[in-house]
Image 1: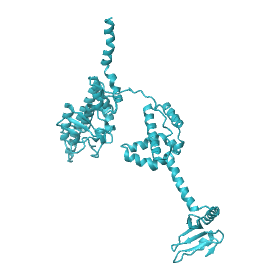
Image 2: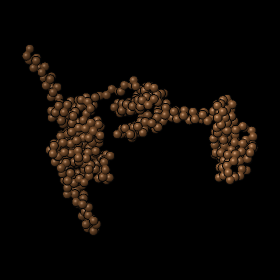
Image 3: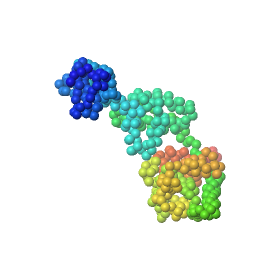
Length: 417
């Protein structure tokens, strides 16, 4: 059947038991196919330069209108006249669009890098958040169009905003790693940021460790907190008893909760936060008095062994008696691994009247105390799990007697003249 395909024609079409087609009497190859269900679709039928018969799906009515379909059919007819294959051109355009999506920073991260990061990085989600937070303004750009100047300008803006150089370096290093993957996966030929050097840092930095007085206040705050929790439980049970309510278990174990043993263990071992949260009882050997930090849960990916002093052994033995989990410190809310203890730590610091001291700074205190007691830096490096001795040398200034002894030799030499 032939007819001029128009909006008015389509309104008069009645479906049949079998599919049928109406061929346009104006544009060669333009047609509509009508299904028994009443569905109508526009097509363009043509032969390729090689003589192969093909059909191009223009669209479905009424989402695609008759005038729009006619206009598209005229364009397709012109392509065929020029010896082109519209279907192949559509496929090529689709491939090109997909390639271009991969070539933008946003597309590459979403379509390729994201899955890789989540599968191969312990903190893949954090990496993706860091990239989005730091470089969202570059997301629409093609990877090859991101320049060193873009990053230099961004770094200057961040520095002027008061962002620490270490934080800026971390973000740039992360972006460079993304572009390295793009090179490795043949998305771009070279990394445009490969020659960017990190901002210079004060490698010594400011190490926040507890003074003797602060440590005493911290320990007292832990004891006072325990006493308050126990007293609150006893008071609550008295209130329940008067009213005939079921009482909560009495807190008659060695510790009221996790915070005191966790804090003292970290203070005596220098464990990282994640290493504390990942710790399981099978990592504790009471016989040899050692703690094993498993490589899979360590920042350095290296297994290390830390001797446990008498305070650690005592507190762990006591804490073990009231633990029913494979984790040494399970969350009291979920029973699973902790994500953080920020709220409890903030309250503890207020109680101890210790300012600007993070949970992580217990690790600095552990290393600082070792150095100040004369432990050599190599041993400190092994206990801390540092990948290089340079990281440990940040604590060297805490052993001034070595430098003082060296300078004192000048006096000795002068007296001998």
